[in-house]
Image (tube, rainbow, N blue to C red; front, top):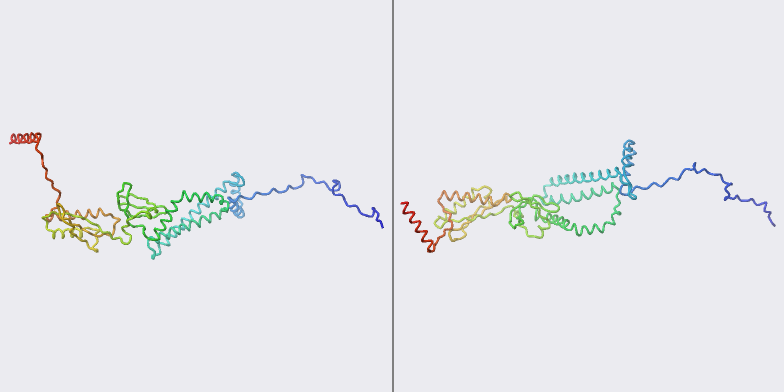
Length: 359
């Protein structure tokens, strides 16, 4: 059975322009252009701007004006507002780290069970932790993606390995010195200058890179921490602050040795800064070429005040007591032998003639 073609409804042709209404392009809304996403380096600034705009329209207008003053660098928008946010965050991180570092210093100072080295070690570790925490907070506020810095990790590692090798070595050396308590603020150590002369100095501060040592003439030495671990260091107050000082004295052979011993002991006992316990001691050291050699040995507990000055005070007292008791301090005496010569005979004759004329 055949079906007539007239019975089948014809499908509308969609490709004919006359079948569809014409659309005026001017009345058709243009598709919105994709808004470029803010760069990761200033994402924190954009988020802060949006948060402020929700609170105050006046402040939002000011921020928009600051944000309009800038330029685009590839996909990064650098404006006055983004720079201002970065500066404020950096300053906030510094202020936060300093305040909490001082607060940690105050708390550790209240703990009486810690000695000076343990307290300083705790301060340095807490300072490092506070600064690291503050930097991480700043990175989070600025919404910086750390994966973007992965490209520079290799170069940064090389920089640490070569350029900052000594810096990290001194940092670790300072922490180790504080942990084993071999060096601590207030200790008196021997310091040698560039000419090789040795002097005494007191440790004023142990820093991240070096320690500060002040000598008696107020010269401040900055000694790297690593140097103190490699070289030999004389610490006069490592286990005890008591230091023994020696003062040699010589008297003539005609002196009363018992009286000399008594006067030397009296000079030591009457000099300030010398400890009564342990008591001073006077030793007969030997018989020299022109003197009987004694030595005064005494103790002090403030080596940072100097050793030469206390020895000088003892010698001044000894000198006064010896003069009061007619004790002679010998000095070298030499015999001069003159050879006979024509010039010498002429000189002697001229002197004799002048003396005869004078008489």
